Length: 585
Image 1 (spheres, rainbow, N blue to C red):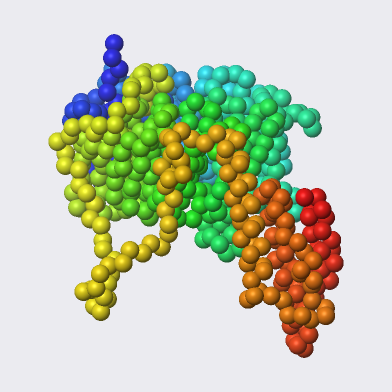
Image 2: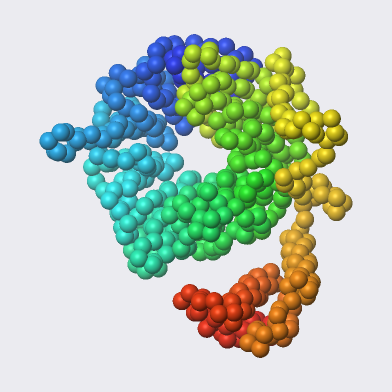
């Protein structure tokens, strides 16, 4: 029996309703339209068979397959809903409030039995962050964060805490996907000079100094994002600081770390400096894609050894989305970018299409792995709200624009379990469509009156780098091997060191013959072939050059600051360190 077409849920100022998925796009009779602007939240169960929504008066649950109302709960202030993985429990959350006399408020997190409609347990959950308990896929285990601890419940028995994981100031945790054995990743922020760290544990082995499966510590972290792969063998950690102390980025600093359950850990070396916009695992759990660097951003696929497998070059992008089957990757630039998308076949590393979804604020793959949803929603953008359904080859199959006096708040696909939709062969030919594909108007650059009758000269702010298999030196479409990439990095490091040697020998930078100046001619230019050593040598030379300039200023009678005098005192130690590095070469 062929799987049914996924439904589309639309929520906005026009009400809440469902639309049949491709190819019909008509309003569905599964859910009668609920008019009005009071619907604050809606959600599907993980397998798509149940649907819950809050209309400002009650929270209702219906069966999508039977089209019948199952339960209705009197929760007018509920703003968050979530089903457990096997549809046993519905979690609801409403903002925590206290009375005017200062007495504690009532529990605001409720867990309801979907079968009977009874309330299993109520908790006080003050923050929206991590409000929902985390279940294992078989619901044997459930965890929630409480006062620097992670409490574990077994078999949905919320009256008894089966286990606790206690570490000082646990800020966040993520339960692993998949079957037993269950694993949990916890993050503890640093304080008083101690580094932040992420640790992986296997439930229920939390006691003892060697209980952790893996540990990774880092100093530059105000917050982290932890991403398990589907097979629960590794976690990617994006560590972020709120402020970049070097002043290079408005977004703070980000670093990407890889932690495996076998104890291995590494820092993922990203070839371009700048923010990390997005990191996403492939469903195969064997590779991941990172979008990073100052605009135009780079995108690279890495393997489990954190070696680059394929480089997509640079472009206007800040997000990456793998298809449910993992064979197609979309690189996109949404938010403050124009909405340009690149659809790639990641088995053969071939570009399929380059559609443009202008002003988009939301993107989602359809569970069938063929169709894409893009939407412009309020409050991110309050004009030109609407949504589009695309085929991955770039054709627009359906388009809906809300009236100018209305808003669109949420659009989402009905989810399906893995394996319901089989993977299909990738096609590169655009599928036919009756909806015209609007080409966005490209704004021309302003030209002052004096230049308007003169020929236009092509000038770019940035030189864009093509994908790895489209570079002129690449004779084939296959990605470079690990050995070739290593040799390429060594070659680039040698080239950079040679250029530095030439610049140091240029007459403009020749040192003045002062008796106390650093004998720069005794510092030989070295090419180690190791980028890390060359980088250290380069930094030491920069420091020695700065000391030389300070000594020249002191010779002219300028009063130096205390920290400048301390720099001069370090000259001997820096020279010795430089000598040791060069002798090691």
